[in-house]
Every structure is written in C-alpha cells, then in structure tokens.
Length: 320
Image 1 (tube, rainbow, N blue to C red):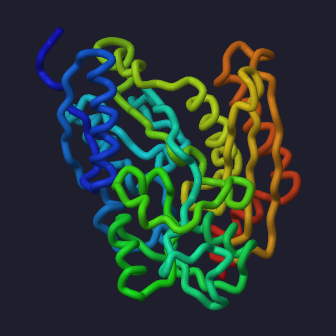
Image 2 (cartoon, helix red, strand yellow; image 1 turned 90 degrees about the vertical axis):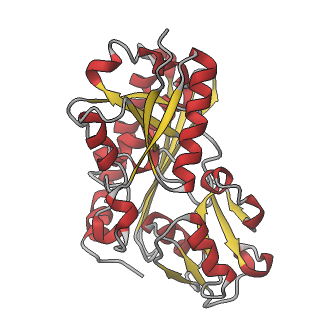
C-alpha cells in the first residue's frame, strides 16, 4: 500500500476541520490509508449575505467540488445537510458516515430553556426551517437572521446582543461547545434539516470505481438509507437546503424505516406535516426502499400544498 497520504479537501472552519479530521482518523484506522487535510475556502465562508439571499444550495460545497474535479484533492468531506440534492457530473457520494445526534439545540443566556424565554426575546438562527418551526411553537419570540461560525454565534449571546441562538447539536459537539447548550429540541418539536448530523464523503466517479473504493469503509448503510429518504423530500419539493423543510427518518426495527417531514411557513402560520413507514425487505435494498418512501411522502405533502409553502418562502412571502 502506498504511504503517500490521500488528500482530503475540507472547509477551513473549526467545525469543518474537526469533522474532516474525524473521518480521516476512522478511514485510516479501518484501511491503513494515511490522510492529510487540504484546507479550502468556500464562497459560503467569505460572503456576509444570509443563506436566504444566496438560495442556500451549494454555497459551502462548490469550492470543494471544484478542487475535486481539478485533481487538487482525492476526496472531500461535507456536512450532508449542506449538500445539494441534484447530482454533479463526475462526482459521486462515496460514503455517508454514521449519523451523530440530529437534533437542534438552544444556547440561551442565564441557562434559560426555550419555554422560559420571556416574550419578545431575540433568538438568532440562519435557518428558515428553524424559524418556521420555532415560530409555530413560540410566535411571541423575535427570530433574528445571523451568519458566522458557531463560536461567532455563541458570542452574540455572551455579549448580550441576543438572548439565544439555535444550532445543530452535532455541530456544537464537534467544536466542543456542548456546555453552552441550555435546551435540546426533540424531533417531535422541531424536525431537523434533511441529513443533519451526518457527514458526506465525495470523490470523482472514475476514482470511486478504482483506487478510492476504500472510502466505503466509512459508509454506514442505515444512515445512508435514512438520509436518502429525507433528501428525496427536498428534491421532490424542489427545495434547497435553506428552505423551511424538516425531515427525519429512523429505523423503528431492523426492517422498518419511518420518515417524518414538515414544511412550515416562515411565520409559522401554515404547515404541512406527514409521516409514513416502509418495510425495507419489500425492496431490493434499503436505499431503494428509502427512495420510494421519500417520493411517496413528498407526493402526499404536495397534494396538501407543501410545494406552495416552499415557493412562497423562496419568494419572500410568509416571512416573520
């Protein structure tokens, strides 16, 4: 086996490098292949615009994909929730890591829980999905769009600029900031973003059929099946990762996959929620079962007007 390290492309943020380093360590432990990180700056890292202005889709991944196609790196690691659902020519999703805790977390001043925040309290989040679902629970709070890494957002609470921020629990864990968490939203309260908590490993399609086949060593099939169902919801609704769409799939038994999804107007005034379960063994494999499940649930939600809520959100209507 070659001792030349494989080049792993990653964004420069602390969270991105920590999660990429984790994938590298697991890959090396399982295959013996040494890995070095190559730091890349994405447009999403340098722009000050909010995700709703950018459309959200792909702003954090395009630079990594460009580096892949140019041969500057062998493979790249992304937060799966940032990955567009549309395929990119020449690039394949080689692995999906085992998912960490998919829930959203509140980090509030004075150790406050969500229910204890006073009316009018300011809650920062860059996610329309979070705003929509939180507003449905607490329309009396003021939701403020924010950008920046986890440390920057948490700093706005510490400085008193905001009363609280909402971030992914898994992301806070990856940057060692779980001590800042004051409340965690169960998926029954706030459905996470499709793919939240999982990491995606991409490489060039030609390499995956040859020298990089070893990337399958970090693939976790139950997670891949679950996030496939979630991402199909996004694709069928023609919604980007910044749309107010939550989805979460989990195995209730070895052969039973349950998918829950919600599309909620940004001000919480309209919502379409649905869930469905599939028996995986009735399909050739788990991913095909998950794909069928996602398509059926998305179709049911579209019949209830979910696509119109997504379109209104994209057009700036129904915002708080």
